Length: 302
Ligand code: PRT
Ligand code: ZN
Image 1 (cartoon, rainbow, N blue to C red):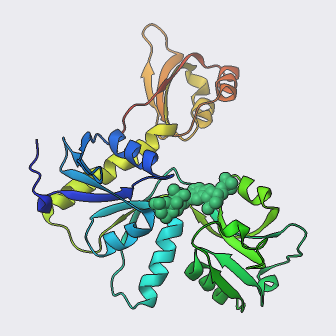
Image 2: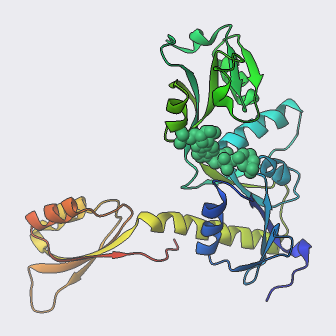
Image 3: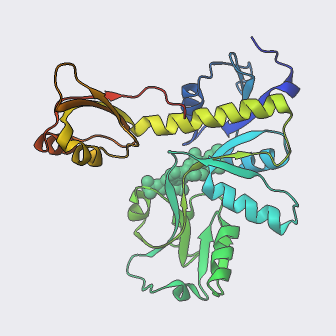
């Protein structure tokens, strides 16, 4: 086991309890991390890698990374953008680096008006009271569009602001749109498309730590690629090779092997970086492929 001297270990800030928690921990486990939880349940100690996970509120993650309390953090782009604007406004000389976007936590920060309220473009926001938990991102959007409006800060339950008479419209996170619908609100414009992302400290890491961060980043990239990837094997007439390889979704340079005892047929093996659907197999069959096998990919390292 690695030493648990905190200085040598990588600290990753992850949301303690919320929409990103399970996905974030699952990602780290897929990267090979096994861990035990500390007594206070606020730290997960990596057992097979020098990596510990600090469980915190998502809003605190950018600051923890920017201040180099944590080396890495997993948090939504919505929070990253709001924090970056705050840090810049405070004159911070260094932010944090965004090193990867991840495949969970997808949502968008959108304006929504009470159903039936006319809305044409950003100009329609002029003079309006806008309730939001993202005041800096919204103000920045208004400024970029040359619109003057009043931003009213709500820390939660933003969607009830119009019915309480506290705002004319809202700017909040939307994923399925059900919450807006339930409050008779209509999405009219998107300010930011968001998903979870990995950020890292602006401070240079000690070489041993830097190597582990690099390894982790490579593994994350592998995990993201693997989810959609398939390994396909088939037999193909040599004459149809061009057509067949063109049909393989997202594959680079397939391996072509001769088949014992035939001159006109070859075996094709390829990694497809996209899902392989029945329709693709049917099209492959039409141009002469046979003996097709599609297998899931478990791990991938470029
Ligand atoms: O306690 P802590 O501060 O850590 O958690 P939190 O309550 O601030 O965050 P949490 O767990 O709700 O969300 C964490 C992150 O998940 C957000 O910062 C986003 O990056 C991402 N995310 C993805 C979402 C949503 N989808 C989402 N739908 N965050 C919030 N919502 C809310 C939204 O605010 C609205 O109330 O869900 C409602 C809308 O959902 P739909 O499906 O009805 O449109
Ligand atoms: Zn939060």
